[in-house]
Image (tube, rainbow, N blue to C red; front, side, top):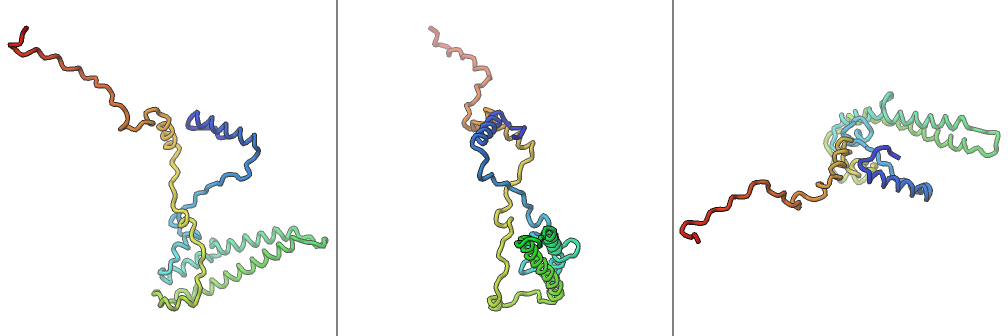
Length: 214
């Protein structure tokens, strides 16, 4: 359990929930862990950043540069993915056992080796396509020509689907908010609070007007 809570009530509630979980056993569906995904503009050289930069109206030089970044030998995501699949295939290779009639490790290695071969072929195709991208016209062709070839992209960026979200406040801001929420003055709106009694002295009684003395 966490060691710090903003209030005693929050600590007691967390302890009660912890005891309930112990009584009923582990949760079959653990809560989802939310990760922070930076927007594509925050890292233009990441894969989401390159996808967001690769718009239909981008210039041929920009598109060629983006494809070169994706296929860069040292830091390109496609060569890195190819090496990742190769490492996975080598992991399965170390578990091959041809002494038994059924060898599931060989089936796994075959699939990984096939994926590695296709990724290596994709690198060669991108290298060949990069030279032709720069020679394409900058303007768009007539829309009637687009219907002959299907659109390949089927996924949106996660940031476009979920939105930017709300930034997480820093610990000091959260502590102030918790302290304000626990204050009795914060529970009643300012316009609904009764006015404080005035401390100004009351005016002295005036003497009766002349001619009215009894």
